[in-house]
Image (cartoon, rainbow, N blue to C red; front, side, top):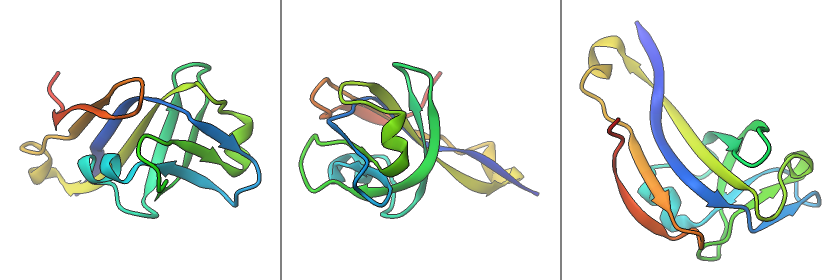
Length: 121
């Protein structure tokens, strides 16, 4: 049986811009996408720590170091300066899931990597 589990989490990002005039998605710094093993156009969940809103969208590279943009309709739920978490998930066989450890990427207030490694509780 396949189960869906957390693959990676980018914690405490600061929204740099919120733009309605874009067709959709969240734009993330490429270095964060690589550290969290998030591929371009991959489905991600975005949780807004500031106001509690949550969305599901796809990730694209922002092209600017430290620059995070929430675009399209989601821009009505996310504002510049909001703190967010970005989560990706994977399907694993039940047997594989016991030895799997998600990636946790922690960022500073400039959206630069502070630390990255296994998500250990």
